[in-house]
Every structure is written in structure tokens, then in C-alpha cells.
Amino acid sequence: MSLKHSTHDAADVVAALAVAGFSEAEVAAMDAALAAALQGPRGANPLVGAVVIAADGTRLATGYHRGAGTAHAEADAIDQAKAAGHGLSGATMVVTLEPCNHCGRTGPCAQAIIEAGISDVVYAIDDPHDPAAGGAATLRAAGVRVRSGLGALAALELNRRWFDAVAAQRPFVTLHIAQTLDSRIAASDGTSQWISSPESLADNHALRGRIDAILVGTQTVLVDNPRLTARGADGAPAGRQPLRVVMGYRGIPEGAAINGDDGKVLHLPTRDPREALDELFAAGVRHLMVEGGSRILSAFLAAGLVDELIVYLAPTLLGSGTPALEDLGITTLAGAQQWEWDPASGGAVRPLGRDLRLHLRPVQTEPAQTEPAPPEPAPTEHVQTRPALTDRPPTPPAAAVNTSSDSTPLRTVADPASGGN
Ligand code: AOF
Ligand code: ZN
Image (cartoon, rainbow, N blue to C red; front, side):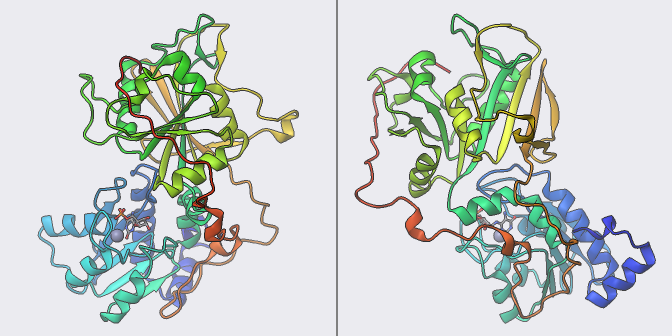
């Protein structure tokens, strides 16, 4: 919870913070870090922002994470501070997530902070992701003063669905719909290329280039014969390609374009989104884009398994044809799914050529809090805090992830291909 939302007046807030052990400059820096985090894209990694302030509270640099495989927020902020010629000895790093401790796709942030000579770290919330967790302990062992809890509720809310996905050991799911104004994804004769503007298609291909996997149903393969590769405006394949996944019972024709020639194709003989996510998580997929068609889109939505919704809305009317969605099992307005505009990843509403790109996330479905929100936690110097994570569903045991040898084997098909989208 950001203190700017408090009902107290400014003097009360400053006094309360002094008691809690956070300076006015640290509170302002955390607000700025939370705002910076929103500039990043949602996906396999959380949105993270970081602000470095000098001992006198002067802001030296602001950084954020631009998605899996790129520099973490702390490293970004440190690089920017150095590029601007600032010394970091005695500075404070204010960051929305516990600095990581692991050498993943990028180096451990805890080490980068220590090496930069930063003396204080204020972070909002612990990193629940096992390989990355433990940065606070590493920092303390190196003599860095570490406090946490500032902005914890806002930081949790920022990445609510990412925390859920980590706890449930499933990929983060982005669902993509390219539709007309009247929610059609194809005309009655089956034609669908192209409903979206070239700018929307380019945006979708950029997203394809940074996800781990893209999923369609067998019906889409049989009707549209898509390639599902990430391509640039000139049609050339992007450097990084997603795993192409087909879900459903029917077989994939040998000559289907989706087969490609790189072997990065998986057929999941199931109609159950949960089963598909279990299989994909076990195969290392952490960010999945569900591309269509309407039965698959609806199955993921009905199961509550969509973390992010991107709709490319074309100013086109068909009046007939394939609706984007099928029955979601909702019969009364009180049962409607509620979504909220998501300002992250390029904004809630953005014109793309003649289309609008709409970006949404599910409204929290957990029971409403009956008690007033807890106060901003006091800083923790020795105890690892995990504030609102305690009211999350418990992490399922590892056995919940389908890795058993008697599970339906995955069939990989890799045949020459042609055509499609
Ligand atoms: C941070 N700062 O800005 C982010 C963190 O695959 P990697 O190497 O990018 O590591 C991803 C994990 O690191 C991610 O699952 C989460 O636990 C943490 N993300 N950590 O210190 C950041 N994005
Ligand atoms: Zn990191």
C-alpha cells in the first residue's frame, strides 16, 4: 500500500514513516520504483522497478526490468547511475522485489549491489521464486543494511497473477484475441487474414519473440494452417522462436505449416487447460501465449487461467462469422467475469494503426477483505517477510506438477511446412 493513498495528512505520514524506519526520500523512491516497474512487459518474470538514492536522498537513477532475458531493475539502475557518473558508495537501493541471488539469464543483483558499494537496500516484498530467493541474506552477510516491507501491498498487487503462477507452478498465461468490433475472429466463410492492422500483427510478432510457447487448438491448425513463428515486418524469422503447441485430440496433418523444420512443436492430446499447463511447466515453459481459436480461448478463460488479456480490436463489422468466445458457463450478470485495465506493458489502451490494442488483467477473485487493510509493515532487518502472500492459495506439492512417467507422452512432430500465419 502506497502511503500516498493514506487518509492521513502529509505531516502524519512523515511522522509514521520515521517511526517505521523509512525516510521520506525512501518512500518517494519506492513510489517511483513502483511506477517505473509498470513500463516493463508482463510475462515469465515479474515487473520490477528500482531507484538509487544518495545518502542525502537525492535520486541518482531509476531502472526497471524489460522482460525475461534482459537486465534486472537493480542492474539497470546501477548502470544508469554509473553512466551518469554517480559514485554509489553509501547509496541506497530502493526496489520493489527482493534482489535476486541467482545467476539466471542475468547476474545476481545482490552481488551487483555489493560490488557497487551500495550500503542500504530497501525492498518491498520477498522473491518467492526459489532459484532467485535469498538475496537479502546475501546482502546482510556482506554488511549491507537491508530493510523490507515498504510498499509491500502495492508490490504484491503489481504482480498479483505472477505470484499466483509461481505458487501454482504453472506458466504465466497471456491470451491474445484479434477481433472485429463485433467480436468476430473469422467471417462465415472462414476467412480471417487479416482482421488486424499490420501494426497489430507486428506487435503480436514482437510478443511471440519473447514468450516461451504459443498455443492453438487442433481446429485452428486444420482450418487456418498457421506457422506460429515470430517474424519481423519483412517476414524474416526472429532470432528467438517460441515452442509451438497444439492442444486437442485430433491429429496434426503431416504437411501442416505448424510443424516447421526446427522440431519446436508439441502436440498435447488434451482439452483440459490445467493439464496442458502442467505439461508445459514440466517442459520448462514459464510464459505461454494462447492464440486461439474460440474453443481454446474460452476454455482457458472459463478455467480462470488467463493472467493477461490482449485484444486487438479492428474497426470492422462482420455481423456473422466465428465469435471470439464460446459459452463460459456464465448464465447471470452476477456471474460475469470482471476484468480491469492494465497500465503495464504498453498501457491499457493503445492505438495500433487503425486498431486499438486493449490490455487487461483479471479482477482479483479472492474473497473481499472484511478487515481493514493492514498498516504498512515496519521494516524487517532480520526476518524474511512475505506479507500478503500468506492469504494466497498454498503452493501445491511438487507432485501436482505432472512429471510422472505414466502420464500421456508428449508427441513431438517435426515435418516440413508451408504457408499460414
Ligand atoms: C530481481 N530484479 O528486476 C527481476 C527479478 O531469468 P532471470 O535471470 O531474468 O531471473 C528471473 C527471476 O528473477 C524471476 O523469476 C524472479 O524471481 C527474479 N526477478 N529479480 O532482482 C528484477 N525481474
Ligand atoms: Zn536480479
